[in-house]
Image 1 (cartoon, rainbow, N blue to C red):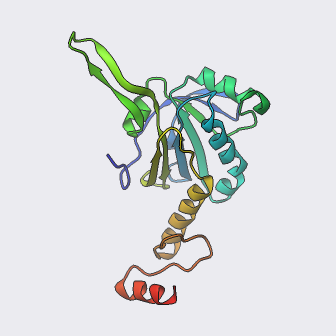
Image 2: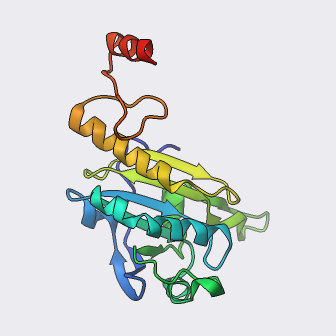
Length: 209
């Protein structure tokens, strides 16, 4: 299931914000009409690839903020696990210093609605509920516009860390299209030539490249 072009699934859940404060009923709805959102899932707290991604997002947080983007993380761990990890020093495997919100999806419904849960519920032959697969999220990332519509998505398997620079590039491409009406060709980055979405525009662009 692709969410691109559709409204981002709505949720209300507990989250840790500012690296230390647990809040209830956190929702992406607060950003509609005001900010873009990069909403990303990761498999689990206190693991290996996950902190490298989360810290990489924090290291570029000013780049996102100056573009009007809210960065929000999410995993199937509890808010208390998030809080503990956020208050553990980096040299002890923690992510202390990360300030953007991290959502707790302990019910796994957010991961299911975004179609990133690495397994599914089923029933065995005795009629008992069982879970097939891993009850954690893949490395999903969703770029949501100011109207709450998903404009870009990416889902990686567990061992494959994402590029924060690519997430920024996609933000820049979306903002360029919205501002100028020009589409962004392969490997486009801010400052490069874009093109008109027409046969003449394509021909003109390709003749120069």
